[in-house]
Length: 321
Ligand SMILES: [Zn+2]
Image (cartoon, rainbow, N blue to C red; front, side):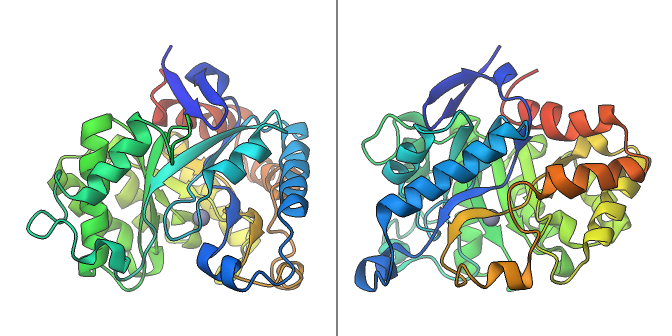
């Protein structure tokens, strides 16, 4: 049985159990938080996160994969404090989240080697996976990058390639934030294929944001996993459409190609916390158990298919049998 690194140490991949493949503990801009802390209360936020994740564990979830990386305010010491107070396994990631440029920190580093195995960015990702994050013993177990409607900008391409090379060096799987409305997943797969990545180790996150089952089928036929991972964030697509799409893909025989999640956060500074219940009242960690699983069952998705999406596909992604 293979081992998977979590924030509280390695576990057997067989222990991952029911795994939500895209959930965040904290998403925030650390520079803004430090300069304009407002009513930020560190202990209150840690208490709140521990309570929310413990409530999720009580619903039968055993593990979350947290793709919070550079650009989203990753602070592993803060996440460690939360992880130590809940039974839920939290899997940490490395990578960089941008829709456009790389941070200026990287702009003049690695000139002549940018986007290669020798790019200092690649080496940072590898170090997070093999040595540990920020001087802690916590190791990242997967890689994260993004390609949005802006498409393959030079910055986005550099990050995609560095993530691909870090994957080749370590075997760590990859999660790509995609924008299915512009079919950016196809571009991500092309770049990762050029690097030599194993596409069966790639999740195209936010694939569930489109009801276009033909496009999803085209993506899944490359061997990658589709992240049907924004349940509750029903802005451009309704709850019913999200559920219908997963059921339609199951009916086409693609349960083995999908993972389920919310892309929710214990705390995210992109909105006022009071705003979320107004524009997305179902966008929280328990929506899947409250509403999504019953809706999928109503649409003919079997328990075996649910187990495939929630247990088997995540375990294989993280190296299990
Ligand atoms: Zn996310």
